[in-house]
Image: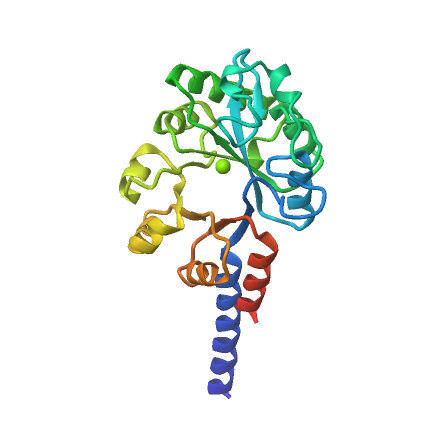
Length: 258
Ligand code: MG
């Protein structure tokens, strides 16, 4: 009887443990969910669609315009417009591939108040640290004003921007550095929430995943679009995967649960 009970407890524990393992990896839609009808990278539609398929987060890229407004786009030159050298009026006159005007961050944030996916806000590296500081100040203030502080994470390739997010966002807000050149301990010392690096970085240094976890930090890998890489990362217990293929990743996560 005792043995039976022990075996049952062990089986339940193993089942719970494997579910826990499978649930650990969360899906972040890279520039929103855009590879679907009516969507486009960094569009309001891409944010809405990422939310509709229950992604943990929807990533977006932010620029500060020459008149100190914040707009959402990835490219340093988009359809002939350089966001950091243009006014917000010029930027928002540009149409995305789905016909939407280039969104302002305010429009993005307002829409996200109706949704539940987290905003993974990337500040693009600007020409000067002063621009980045102004951008970080504007972003942090806006997120505060629209009461989204519990649902935002900040990321950047710029070390200066990362330091400014850590300095200016409320304590405990997750901030990640993207550039891949700092070891987990250095990230911890900076105050980062973890490593948010290219898949290739973790392929070359898989021990960084364990090191991050041992330091109480999270791991996110980008931009992972094929099943084999997704499976490898899931088996290495990464916390988040940023992907252009959120439905494929969800399917693989589901298969890992079974
Ligand atoms: Mg990005």
